[in-house]
Structure formats: C-alpha cells, structure tokens
Length: 61
Image (tube, rainbow, N blue to C red):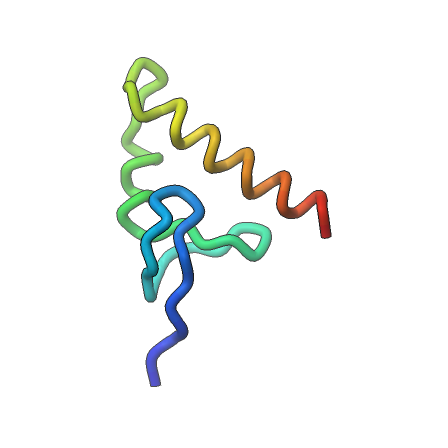
C-alpha cells in the first residue's frame, strides 16, 4: 500500500515521499535543493519563505 499523496510546502507538487515538518511535507527534491543551496543562490529566498510557511502553520494550530 502506497502512502497518500501530499502537497510539498515548497514546490506545491503532489508527492508520495519526503520529510514532514510540523505536519507539512517537504519533498525529496526540495529537501535536496535546500540542503545544497547557498545563501547567495537566487532560490534561497524561496526556500526561506517555504520554511516560514511551515512555522506559521504550526503556530496556528
């Protein structure tokens, strides 16, 4: 039996696998991109905003 699809908080694509942080999914592709990103990367700010959404959703529980 496969796990249910969930929407990645970063890329907004439905994925089967990834890590769950405070009930939000970060897919394996985004996790890999975050880990290998550098502060100077253009996408870094996008990842930071995605992480903020995780914490804001956790605070609203």
